[in-house]
Amino acid sequence: MRIFDPHIHMTSRTTDDYQRMHAAGVRAVVEPAFWLGQPRTSVGSFLDYFDALLGWEPYRAAQYGIRHHCALALNPKEANDPRCAGVLAELPRYLLKDSVVAVGEVGYDSMTAEEEHAFEAQLAMAQENDLPVLVHTPHRDKAAGTRRTLDVVRAAGMAPERVLIDHLNELTVGMVADSGCWMGFSIYPDTKMDPDRMVAVLKQYGTSRMLVNSAADWGRSDPLKTRAVGDAMLAAGFGEDDVEQVLWRNPVACYGQSGRLSLETGTAGPDYAGNTIKRG
Image (cartoon, rainbow, N blue to C red):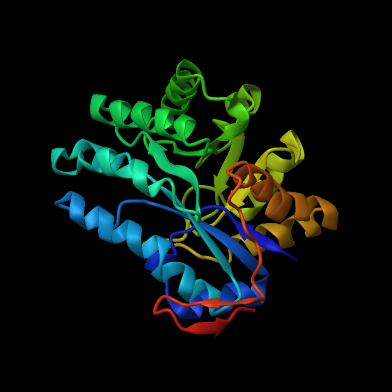
């Protein structure tokens, strides 16, 4: 089973996780910029984080035969902190980097005016850089937040096929399916979605434009939940081609619109320190 996790925060994970992920079939990931749990107090701390996503984390992943790309943005939660507002001025130069395959995570946390300003500004940056967008839907008032998200995307003139709306559930999938956007689902041990619920959604809505991720981070989460969904799909009667579409071809098609997606993992290349390593 070949797996592409389209939303995972490997900065928060250990090398043991990379090893387990590779053994489970994970060969590629996208790591979106997010809130680290501890509030950042300056633009500089964001830039250090972005640099790590562009340099250190791809090196860590390559040692375990996993290709690492990232999505960069001022995340919704920290868009409310005036100390972080300057990140928007710094983002354009980072969005030019080869391993950046999307703008994200953008969207809403508490649905404030500050979040909406950052959301709209970063949608414009995505269009200027011809990049897809990864959108975070709020954990609270999810249905209202998802409807507002779709309104903002339409008002910005974003082509729906270049927008991935994430953290969906049974209450929000229908409106996103109707919008033409990609549909993202985070599979968690206790919250969000679980493998059986995900299988039920796939039975109802099909496998087109569906992406499944672990969104594993510093909280209770599991980087192998993508594999769990694949196994649950097979047990429920889906074919191997269906699993391949959801866990590999869909994320490749979504992020491949950036023109920057590279899935080679078996060639030699420079590591973070400039040495040569063997990938694979």
